[in-house]
Length: 378
Image (cartoon, rainbow, N blue to C red; front, side, top):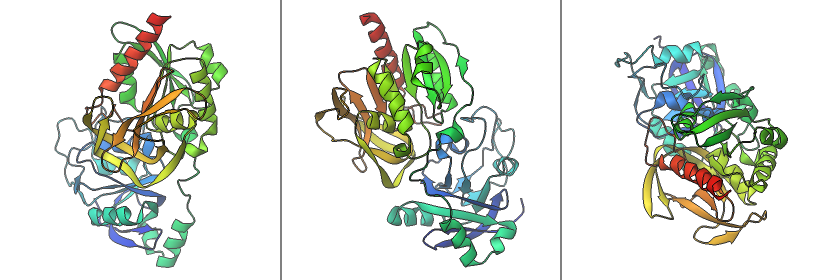
């Protein structure tokens, strides 16, 4: 590991000087912070983080290295990576390499040796903002040049990134154990653990590209439909909203997580909005309104559904009664939706979180039960 200079520049002009980590060069994205003390490999390979520079609040990163079992996808998706103290050695029997080497091999520009909690406090006060990491020769650019490059980069609002992260070709994963039916998974940035959990519940899983039409989807005769997590602004995904409305009109059982929750909200006729600094990390407390049970959950989202909490309302889009099923206990943000007259529900967080916590894994059982009940009724 060499110790070249690097700098993180926020769009408000705030600068943090540190050391290059990973690949050298320049990178841009929305600066966000993640609060997990573990699971950095799952975070890096989560397609939901596409377009974002991730700042880790845990001070020591990389000590368990990387392996071939924990990735949530085939590559690292973050635009940049910010850590305080990268581990100088790898200490885990499962490791097949170092995090630093993997960042270099995949061209991910990062920075280390800076106070990541100070940056987090800045983002909590001012809100998430565009940022750039400059290292190598780019660290020598003038302050004015670096800030101009940051201000010229894309904002997350209005971006549709599904086409960037989705599979191009459909693929199939067979059910494990007793087969209960098939589920079409719209890949908006799906994670490998999601597909494992669905298959483990007896679903034949067919993952389809985000570009699929309703006619193409229905030709596969799925017993249920699932919309995955993913990056970008739900307000820029009109095509996926229309697709989901078609699915709901067909009466197919539906389950959505994260981005899928926002799209269900829009399909039901509610709006979405951008949070000041979003929810990220693996320690968000969420209450299940139906049971009163509090779950510690994993999150990565910067947008939320604008729906009334604490009451049953009519879907503005004509899909019957709807209620908010889950609520964030930190800031009262909508964390789940339940349609009462059609078989559809969603949550804003990640019940499939491979690094944990696993409090919400029961939602996959709830989806299975919904599909079984629909088939028994028919």
